[in-house]
Length: 342
Ligand code: SAM
Ligand code: FES
Image (tube, rainbow, N blue to C red; front, side, top):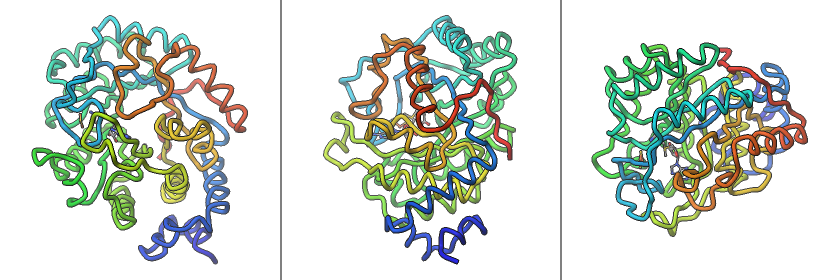
């Protein structure tokens, strides 16, 4: 039995074999085939879509890699109003979206009270939809209020599970311990939790990636989002090399075999470093896409990294473009909330 078969059967591998798998392209073909076999076993050829609403690009934090970090004075900052957010949902619902993802920088303007009002109103209007939040690290009390207001899911990438590596990507006031705690607390509150990391982030080693997988095994999230790190010209990491398509796809496939029932997006970042990146992500085991529902007028201001795709198209255009791409890759977008099956 080779290591891909072993991973398929045991849903796990020891560190040395995992290192081997991560560092060579020798197993790629078989790895992608097995990952696709497993995704089809649980999800057939279905692809779930989530409508992403980037409602504020203000952020109080200063992650070294992120284009909307507080110290980037070149960003034109914006906030969507509650009515604008609701308009995005209305538009998205009409296009067949049954999950709305509200994402922003860590923006103190959006107090608990304001967020709760927004969540409640979406919940009342769209009873059949999932509300996903991606608004960063908050207190347990705040998360509880969001949950009670009707939010069901929360995306918070752990970014890296290694303390030393975390400290190279973030300023000292941010801590991996807090980020991990947030994830476990969110789970306790009954959120379907999504975590993940960037592939090829500066200073990342294979050992770091193995730690990421071990952390995910502990957390057992419903969703796992990974995408290549892509440098942004106005950040301290402007001169750092971006992550590669090859390693990102390999990791998508490995994640599918480690976590057969999980929801794994083919991310916009993957589509940014290769024109067919998202389709290749689907063929390597991904089963989710997160097209943008934000108003076109603000799209170009939510730039986490350089050359981000889909910043000029209306939501409807993105949806039709994706539908065509997904079909050509042999899969099918479905109108479904797309809950985790585990
Ligand atoms: N503020 C929230 C948070 O921290 O979870 C949500 C927004 S944050 C910008 C969303 C994700 O973008 C981060 O978790 C990070 O992994 C990703 N990201 C930021 N900068 C990036 C870059 N330069 N390349 C690729 N992904 C990046
Ligand atoms: Fe905003 Fe990292 S820069 S959370």
